[in-house]
View (cartoon, helix red, strand yellow):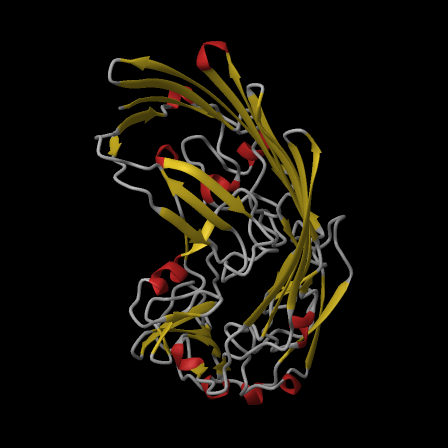
Length: 491
C-alpha cells in the first residue's frame, strides 16, 4: 500500500537512449547512464549515454547498463510517448516520454491504492513441447552446464580478475587434474586464450561514435475526432566501438591453417538426416601462440549501422464514450552483428539485413454506471537469429585439429534465417469508481496475456540438443495469463 501526495505541477521528461531500429516494441527501457550523467556537476554526456567529466569517462557510466523505468500512472495527469520522429528538443534518438504530474493546491489530496496477484489468479501456459524441454511451473528456468574434459583454467590476478585457458593433457586418464598435466606458461604450447585487462591495449586515437537521424511525418484528419499520422525515420551510426576490439598483435594473415569440417546440422550429430555440407575456416599459426600475441585494441569500426523506420497511426479522440488508437511500424535493419574481425570466419554472415515489425491496438469504452472497460493488443515479430555450430579441437573425421583456437563457433546462415512465432499479447482492464463522502472509491481488475500465449522472447541457436529452445527470464517465454485485483481511494 502506498500514498501519493501532489503538491504542485511538475513537468517530467525522460528520454530513453534506445536505437530506433533496435528497441523492443512495448518495452520502455532507458539508458541509466544518461540520467546518471545529467545529475553530475559539470559533466557532459555523449549520444550513447557515456558520462564524461574532465575529458575522461565517468566511473560506472556505461552505455550497456540499462534499467527499466516505472511510473505510478495514478499520479499522472497527461502523458505522451513517441517512439520515433522526435524534434530537435530531444537530444538522443529513440523513445521519448513527456508526462505531467497531477497539479496540487492548498487543499490536502492523496491516494491510497492496493493491488493483489495470487497464484489462484494465474494460469499455466506450458505445453507438452515446453515440458519436454525441461520447463516446469515450479522451476521455469533450467540451466544447462557443460563440463569440457579437455580444458583447464588458471586465474591470474593483475589489478583485476584475469582468466587464461590452456589445453589439459589427462596423462593418466583419470579425468582429474593433477599438477604437471598443463603447461601454465602464458607463452607456452598449452596456452589457448586469455580474458581480461592483461590482453587489452589503449587506443589514443579513439573517437566518440556519431549518431545522425532524419525524420519526416504527415498528419491528416480522416473524420471528426479521427486522425491519421505517418512518419519516416532514418538513423545512421558511424565510428561505433568494435568491442572488445581486434587483436592487433595477431594479423589476419596469421590465420593460415585451413580446416574443413562437416556441418552436423541442427541436432549437432553427424550422420543424421539434417547434416549440412562442408564448412572451411582457419586456425592461426603456432608462431603467434601466447599472451605476447594478445593485444585487443578498442577501435572505431569503419562499418556504419543504419535503420529505416516507417510508422502508421490512427487515433480516435474521446467522443461518445469511447476512444482508441492503432499503430503499425516496420524497420529495415542494416546492422553489423559483430564489428571485431580477427579470423576469416568472423566475416561469415556478419550482417543483419532483416525487416522487423510491430503493431499496437488499444480501445476503451465507458459503460453506464461509470464502468470503464479497455483492451490492448500488442504484436511484434518473433525472435530472430541464426544457427551456429561449435567445432571442437578434434575432428571426428580425423582431419586437421584446431590446435591454437581450440574451438571455433561458426555462423552457418544469414541472421534472421530463424524466426520464432510472433509475440501477441492481449490485455483487458475493467474499473468502477464510486463517489463516497470525502473522496472516490475505485475497484479494478486487469487481465494480462489473456490469450495465455507462450511465445518465446529469445531462442538458443547453437546446434545441439537445445537448438531453438527458449532462453531468458521466465524460461524465455511470455508470462502466463494472470489477473490483478485493485482497490483505491482518493481524496
